[in-house]
Length: 445
Ligand code: COA
Image (cartoon, rainbow, N blue to C red):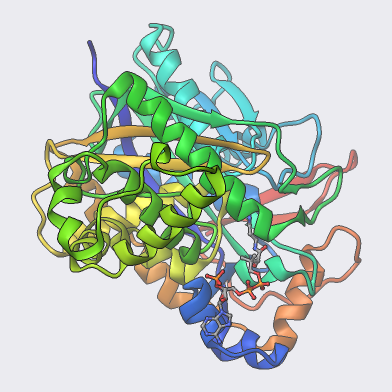
């Protein structure tokens, strides 16, 4: 079977930075440690006044296409995953194609363009669509551009304001990929849930505490569903475990449950038995509540062990480095986590070729998806090209009053215009409105 997967990845961050412990927490009268220790976040990336989901997505695609030497004719699909779309009919992918056609020779007229919506899991679903299109033999030697792009802004004063972010991840999905091959096996956990939604409104209605519970429940189902086709997962089977990361504290919880689940009936559980006992089994309890309480206590003991700590620091922690600095990018978040882990692996000279990652995506509403990936020989060269750390360094550090103005500028209900805080260079920018209310874009040299 031909190998299909992610050939290349590029990341484009919003060009502004809101320092959460340094600027946001003091202005809100909160303890900075709520951010650094509680949520695990240091900063949010935010879009300057000339940036939006189209500019960030197009800028990421341009970098990717130039680096890989791709022309529009090499691209048979452009799928955009977003929960920040501004049009109920015309897909964001058409705008992105229009931007790219300003700078590349040729056009994307024979590419199938679409837009995927299922909260944060839509980026992974778009990769699925591309994978299936290639596997079906309909791609005619072409690959697919998948763009996960979002401005994750919450209403001022909403508790979600702590977890904002803005950025885009562009990926090229192809045969014989240079970065990772995707497993045909997948697991899903999907139920009708009301944890986070935007019913015809720009900013989300979110029940944050419920979304945490729903994330964990659906993720557990996705793991079990994966295991029903891919066999039992074992913690030593994969080198990195990128999760959807609305904030790193969420991943801390999910990872402990994943570890507990995957060590059951293994030598790891046995080796830990003297220190913390064996995992409770439901048949030993009179009620489910008693069983769940005992399981909760076991997990608390488990995460305090050196065995867990070493696993977490090696397999999960590296996937959170970028997220701590950028916040939630919704559809892009799990793909930022993968890139973060691979970047850490490169910096630390890990030999990952042929090794496996387990990737755990989630979207509110709600659906989790789990699959595995095999790292390909070209991974080092691919990851070495990422310049996301330089982009993060260059961000403009907002004062609290400036943050308020930028938030207003991006609020569709307010008519505020602020001078940009940064100067665009070599990138696409939002350039006003057309006669039918369409958004217009220009490339700035
Ligand atoms: N020192 C250390 N930790 C602290 C602290 C301090 N001074 N102050 C608070 N914390 C901890 C809290 O105990 C809590 O951790 P816990 O949940 O492990 O107990 C964490 O920091 C957050 O504090 P909390 O008071 O719960 O924050 P909040 O009411 O502002 O809500 C979210 C946090 C995450 C629920 C909220 O930001 C949100 O809804 N975000 C959106 C979530 C989302 O996007 N969901 C959909 C996609 S999954």
